[in-house]
Image 1 (cartoon, chains in turn orange, brown, cyan, yellow):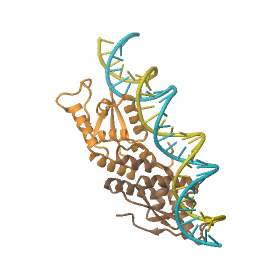
Image 2 (cartoon, chains in turn red, green, cyan, blue):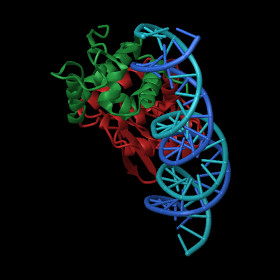
Image 3 (cartoon, rainbow over the protein chains, first blue to last red):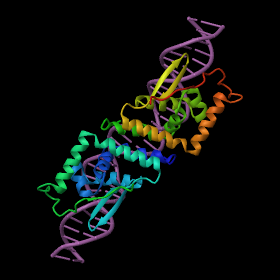
Image 4 (spheres, each protein chain N blue to C red):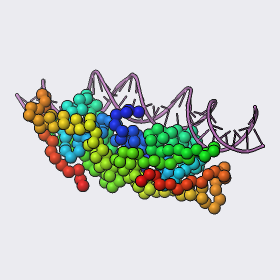
Length: 131
Length: 131
DNA sequence: AAGTCACATTCGCTAATACGAATATGACAA
DNA sequence: TTGTCATATTCGTATTAGCGAATGTGACTT
C-alpha cells in the first residue's frame, strides 16, 4: 500500500468488486456482518477481510452490539474524497446486480420469513452518512 | 483485471501514484510523451507502460505526430465515471507535489530555455476534455 | 468454568501488478 | 538502405493482493 497521494488509497479501496458490493449494501444503512455474509454469499473470512480493508481505508466505521458487529459508511473528511464516494454510491445504485443484492438484504432482514440461521440477528438501522 | 463492475476498472487505473501524476499533467493539455519522461523523471518504459494502462482503461487517447505521441484525457461516456475523473483532477490540482510537476512542465516546454534533449519537441496544445 | 456464537486473524498459495533491463517498432533523415 | 530518434513491448523478477482453510478472540449462555 503506497502512501503517496491520499486519493490513491481511496481508489484502491474502491477497486474491488466485493468491496463495491459491501459499500452498496451500506448505502444509507448500518449493516450487521451476518447479513453481508448472507447476501454476498461468500465465506465469512472473505467478507471480514474486505471489511477490515475498508475500515483501514477510513471509509467505514464499526459499532459493537454484543456479539454482533455493525458496519456503516463514513464520509471522508476531504471534500473531494467524499464527492467520489457519493458518486460511487450513485453509480452502484444503478447496477442491476447490485440492486439484487439490496433485494436480498431486504428479504434477509425484513422479509416475511427471515432466512434460517439469522433469526434474532439485529436489524439494520437507518442512518445518514454524515452530510 | 476483473471485469465485474465498470467503475472497478476506473478505480484501478486511478490507484497508482505515477498514473495520477500523468493524469494531472494532462489536465487541460495534450502532452507529448517526452515531457512526461522529463517531468516525472522516471525511465521511459515505465512512463510508457502506465500510459498504456490508462489507454486500455479508456481514459486517455493518443495522437501521433511523426515520431511523437501525444496523450490527452478523454472523459468516460458514463456520467458517474466522468464525474469521478473530474473530481480527481480537482483534487490533484490542490496537491503541492503535483503543482511542482506542472511547474516543471511549464519550464520544460515553455520556459526561457528548454531542457537539453527536448529542443524541437512538439509543444503541448490546449484542448478541452469533452465537456 | 466450559461451551457456543459472531466475527477476526493467520497461514500458505496463486494470481496480478510494477519494475528495471533489454529489445522491438515505426517514423523520419541521410 | 542504414541509421537514429521517440516510443512501445517483452522478459525475468520482486512485491502485492485475494483467496480458502484453519485457527484465534471476545461476548454471551449455561
